[in-house]
Image (tube, rainbow, N blue to C red; front, side, top):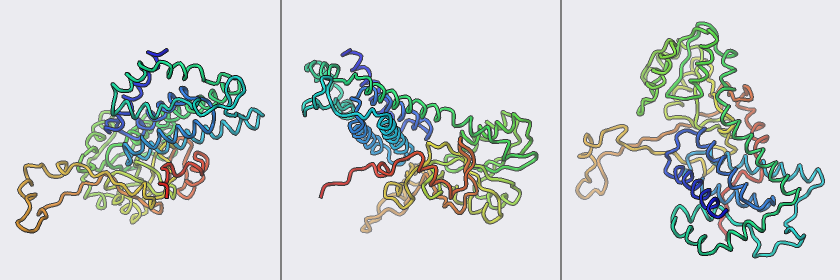
Length: 397
């Protein structure tokens, strides 16, 4: 058991480290790995509602701090907290209210507090050898963790409800693209012209589904500078024999009058119905509004964020490397500090995201169906608890 316990800790810490290094690409993959991590966290903890809420919050704060611009992490933390609260409430309704007691019915003392996986994660990342040495030198810690676990039927049922809920969440994340794509025929009609920007897997599957149902349509793909991910999407669509035209971002307004619909993927959907999207998306939305072209956003429910765009947690934009805009060798001379001024001649700003307000969005398509931006707050109320909107602890006065 000791070796298995340590191996699970190290395996999950590797996943956490990958997330910290931002090597996990995409909100969907980040959300899935976060949910899987919490499934393991919950399976290793004592099964009391208050303890699980505290542990999930503690681990969630570390994950959010590692990559604050990936709002999907905070979304999954809040979803898991809601699952815990709902499971606890359902057991209370059934008359199985859980209390913090040991196997013999006595109240758990201070020394019987559960082993905190979040502390193990933090120690393993920054001091890997020290944690392993600590576990090996103090086997009573592992025996304490094994022996003090509450194995009463009601506690087992509580843990089973939570893990089952997290498994359902992971399944929803894995299948959201397919469920969204199933609605393609309701929006894409014969001989229409579709405009998109950049590269979105959800948009790609959405267009594939319409093509497989024998719908004939034309796709304009804005290249999405400076990364030009639109080139990747255009090649993938052409391989599926979709009529595809690549246009520069600067030509969106000139081409929008020929378009029947704009379909895009986004980074996050905010509580007011606005979206955080790849840079350049606000320009496309403004052009669509000017020419009365529907602006449709396809996004899974794991991208629904209960925060508003004026929250401090959201006022973070990922500033990418300047070399994506200008090769360093071409502008290195301009970066020299002028004599006596203390400032460089040239600044290169390369933000990753745009904010598109809700009045520019026509429709949201999720795996649950299509919704107007004004209805997003109802979806958020179904998935998140008001007690979990703010995850960061306020500093003591």
